[in-house]
Image (cartoon, rainbow, N blue to C red):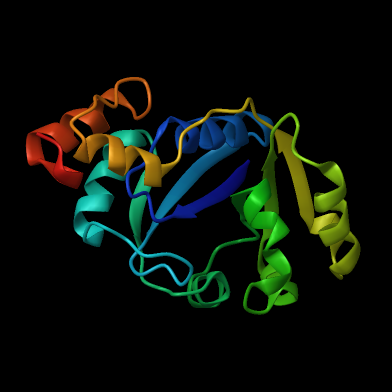
Length: 185
């Protein structure tokens, strides 16, 4: 039984996010997934208030625990909460930037990383990071199928009036349309 944490801006959550969460749950026999919607991500600008992004995330992850992550950095979250050695699910791109995170060694003391890799992603980039961390045994890789969806692109499509069918979960697309989020009508 594993507890997994999956954080992000989810601005909006898309089918790629759902696929990563599903694959992590299957690969690591995750019993409980907590989806953490970053209130104010340190690494990117958000376009909707956190309450709206939480509502979208709940629509995307109806079977999981979705809540606000009020901490600007992963290490702050892990120190403030009393998780018992959780898996912290991230993508391969995020892992390549892991050494720039606040206190990466401390993150690996408090959580294991579950890193989603996709076909064609350069393994040497992942290995280069792995070689520089003190606790490489705390990093677990798992494969996902590539799903071409980026929140930035989806916001632009919605603003242009294009449908997001197949790019976001149906319940998310319904909320975006009903509430006119991202300029959708």
